[in-house]
Length: 463
Image (cartoon, rainbow, N blue to C red; front, side):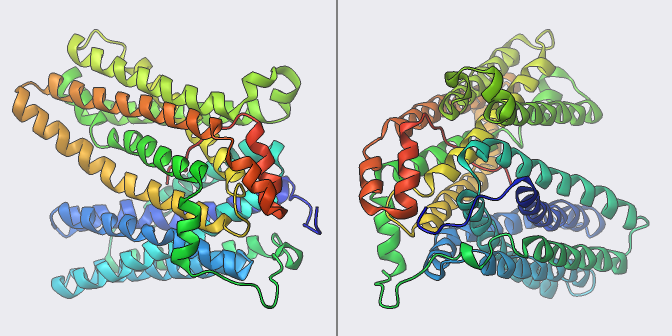
């Protein structure tokens, strides 16, 4: 093992999941609560929070640079702590900016752009290095369940923060908003720092030779991009996440305009979809964990199967929405949406587990750069997906004149994207040429490279 520290157990995985939950706690306040206050309480156009959220996604193109920095230093914990500090500061400043908008609108808006820039940088630093640490310290047999645990804890972070903050903000006042957002940001930073203590350990640092040649960031990024598996995986992440996120802003309007759902019913439909996502995540975790090893044949536990299959079933479910748009209220929309959510959850978790495995495939000491590249692709796709999906539905409605036909055309395009994503995922697995190169490099990259002989898949976290 070349002196590598032993893999972390479920306690360590849960602690890293707690860090992800803290990250989610800050993000949910800035992207939902502050969004609502700007639009409802302050009467600002919805374009403003849209631009702010778009900025925080755009700045996540810095993820490869952040990952490269942790590669050079050999430790991930300082980057996670520094990222969480930046994110917490951004969350508090964002709340202060919204409060300031009430009296000095222009100055408050300017400060909000600074705050969301801090949020984007903080997520880039903390999120990238957290995934790398998870990838390097979790045993291969536990990666799918570990990915599920970490992302479920992030969802719990969303839910708990939204519930508690919502209770504390009522009745609303600017002072309460500042106190709640500041308290959540401070608590998230403290809890995440305590949760990280000792997980990586000093032995987890990767030794660097005193006179080792450290290539510049552009050279390191070019080396990673030159790896066929890493390049194809990047394209897969972008295409699959574009299809995944393009449905976010149009599913509820589709249910209202075509199926006559009330606002409450369409919100419940979103809950049905999230329930499906949860089921898909749990299914992959069980298949990849001890229950799967005990009861399922090898092919049924394959991450490749779950990723490619999840993309194909997602495409089939979107094709079902196309038919539903043409059939109308008689279509079993709730069942269709639940199936879409389950397929989305399955391919996402299988993809994250594959990402953890593939981070070490190729040249040594590039794990953070690879993970950052994939994270940047995901962030860009998410930033574009909602915008493209919503605008495409508007354009199609103008051209076709029918809401049902317009939404059906957009869902059909998303289904095709998922088919393309499935093909790309298959190619990542088949691209075994990276394995000999990984062995040649030796060390961690070589050990991970051997994993390419096992069926893989691909994917990414939701938020």
